Length: 174
Image (cartoon, rainbow, N blue to C red; front, side, top):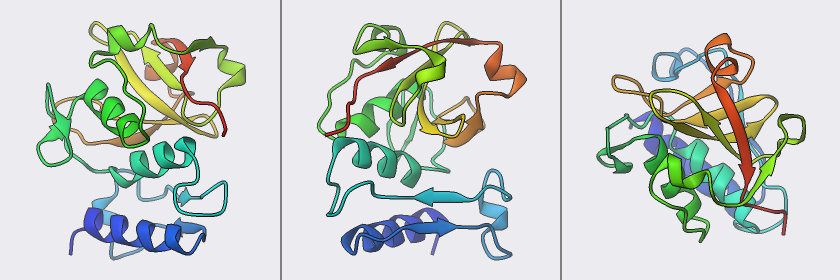
């Protein structure tokens, strides 16, 4: 069984029982993780199954870790580009975003980097435009580029920190 299938089933089971999961890299999955030293926590902020759009966005985004990049991609079967990934994740929570990262810059409201919250859209000057989803603790999840997969990166990374354009909030806590 692939890590992606195992992860999705484990997340679903945990959500049904309103528990918190921590996946730590171990010898069996180390090769499958982009960053094997990263501990990834999946938490439901409220009781119940996907009790808020915020929970749904966070869990869906993390469940897609390892999905391959595909230019123009909009689904987990064929792969995602950056905006296809973000649109897919938000659509799972019932929020319809524009298809392009350029057009996503017009939705929601601007947010200062010091006020980021889980679910905020982050924009970067990479090629013409790049978008990811803030997941807390100075990190974001995105579908980066050809040859890579959906992964978690740090905003303090020199590459991304130097290309950060701004953030927008389209979700609020319910």
